Length: 340
Ligand code: PBG
Image 1 (tube, rainbow, N blue to C red):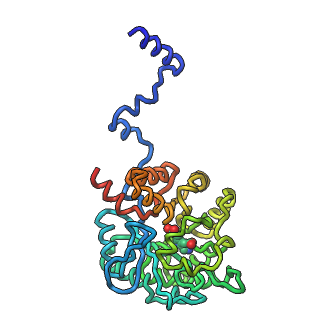
Image 2: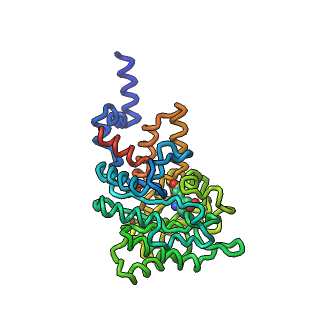
Image 3: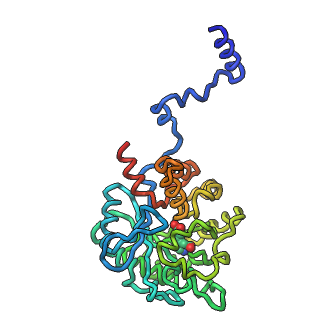
């Protein structure tokens, strides 16, 4: 066809013969040239622990997510290990009568998280365990630190957070995840762990954690929604700031963080990419509860393809340079990867 070939010649002239679609023409070549992808090794699965020994309890605002008994956590950990997921992260639903002003349950070596950690280490030693360090699941006011006259006290909070970290590490936690955003907590936690001979315990700091609307369903899952008085803007970061994220991460790294995290995930991909570029540290994204529930809600309404959206977001984290992702989708992703 004369017309087509003259058009082809024109296109070849302007493109210099490069046709980028050549590398997209079928599945095998797309796979062959793909720059990044998600694997089971990238996944950290956050799970919720509760008292009692009943069946898993659904979290209303997070379809497909449950609160497990300690025994249920062991089963979940076994499932994760069977799927090849490297790490699970534990978050407690503390009964309201156990919550107080200073979050004293955080320091109890027999609290839910510590019992679940010991039970999992005992039954599924091959899986890693990450435990959050912050007081909010334990305080009556829902803040991550100690409150006095409406202010969240930094240094008094750090003192408790160090003790919480030690208690969790002694229970068998492999990675301590300070999510509280107090100043100086990474170095103090490192010193406290080392002081107890816990030199192998790793620290993954929530280096850039923003005050975000995307934590809503999580607060429902750990039962702090009704409890939280005010907001967390005096310690979590302001969403307009990017340079400050670099300062936060530099500080945590200087203080001894082994790995850093950005949270939330998708709305802060620019921050993730910047930190990867700047520090070349193992850097993780937290795909938060709100990000999970947004996808689930739209998928349940038939407005988007949930599976495709799930993979698209996880690939976005990897493309931005993340070493891995904390995601409530983890078991579903791992299962889908197995079926490929
Ligand atoms: C505790 C903590 C929060 C999350 C992880 N650790 C909530 C908060 O800071 O209010 C949120 C996780 C999620 O939304 O999935 N400090």
